[in-house]
Length: 379
Image (cartoon, rainbow, N blue to C red; front, top):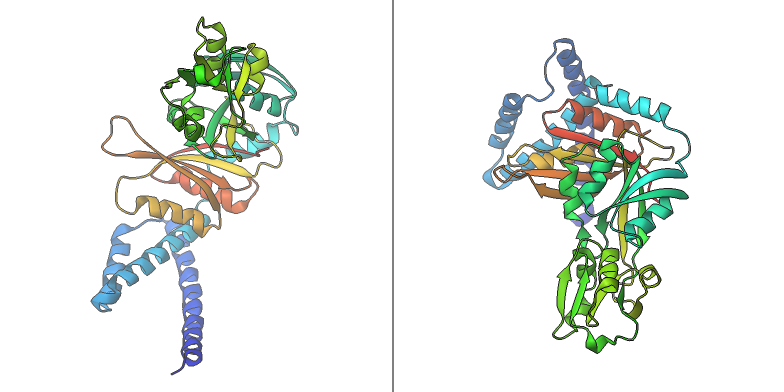
């Protein structure tokens, strides 16, 4: 047989497969109706294991793993389809509906906002991009921002979450597990690092450079080219500039934002020192209560999946089965556990999308430790 004949044979088999798959899913729906009427769970591991063993036994050893993968996919799709029928609304989806109704139609122009660092910090710049007239309260560490929002001292908090060239801000992700909050808006900020020092100081005189670890990582190529220069981590880029300004030394410089030069009376020793010309940091704006503004097209979740083979795959299959686009997956170890991880997901998913609400309802009633972090738009 030539390739066209073989492809025609594949087409005929595919037509049968699709017809049988459609029939299988309709039967799965009838099973879901029975389970709901009799208060039975969707997941029946013993039944799935029995089906899988029979199908694997029906083929030779070479095809066994392929059959296993095929049926695991079928099980995922069947469970997802059944759960969509059995789980229509939950306490979480009702809470989301109430938040949509109660949230104002316009994002506020004025608010008391918590930021990490001091005047000139990139968080402050992100805050100014989000709010027209913010009243900013500064905190030395990221945890102070979470605490200020949780206590009600500040209405909102602005935090960096991810950089395009140096990755995630892991400390912020770790703190997410500790505090209750909702993400209400996101913003992307172009980062333009400068090397700042006191007026009159030359680059060859510098013996120490201070900055936040993210900024140091984002400027690593520039720093590699310097000889006999100590690099010191501090808690914030603007605080690094402030430190240099207040120091009695003339051999110290800071990696900071251009605006910090004027703020702290420093000169620019070197501009454009980032590894990439396209250097962006994503910031999130958090609130104590759930607020969902119009045009919210992103969603963030936090999940602790079961510590067993295939658990993460099975979780991601839920997203795929509903046609939801996963844009971010971050894992962080859970302290005090035996290699267990908390996973953070970002989705391109509107809160008005039925599939997205179905996913939230499924997760809300599932066995995993699940936290819905919010639905929001990013500017």
